[in-house]
Image (tube, rainbow, N blue to C red; front, side, top):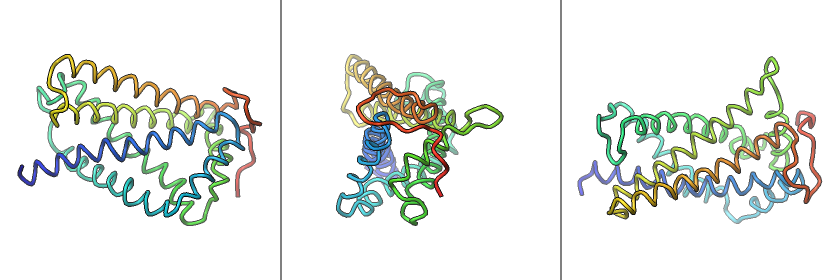
Length: 227
């Protein structure tokens, strides 16, 4: 395996493992907001008690994702081939590239708004719920632009993750037959649908105040702006 091939293999792997962990952990934590502010704050506080959490996040999640984003941006200079591999049609390859760009912007924006501000002590973790509820329920000329952007960002991230996971499984030789590839494709679609459905429900709940569960007291999305 030459250097270029090794870098591409690492690029593909960093788009599956750290991004998958990030999505699963983030979705699990955020869906606790469906049970109200107390449940969400309790979940965030339990995560904050993990020893060396910042080190784990930086080394095992953010640095691999940064490499994936940087190498992916460098690869964007290449034109999409007429018959891109492992995708069977050019439209899907183009859609995956568009989703990748959208996901990069969304994750960087969300990361700056919350994780970086938490590290700088500009926002306390127990204020995440109130901040999200206030921002997502805000409108511009009556249009919930931030909530819509969150939905687009979540969809792009999940779509890119699902495509990347299937692509890695094919190019790494884990899927050999057409039947295996088809089954894996439907499995990725199912996982992506589940992740996006949970993310969308969370965004809608925070933006509108709709209660999906009532196991814990819920808070209005019109929570005063955190200082």
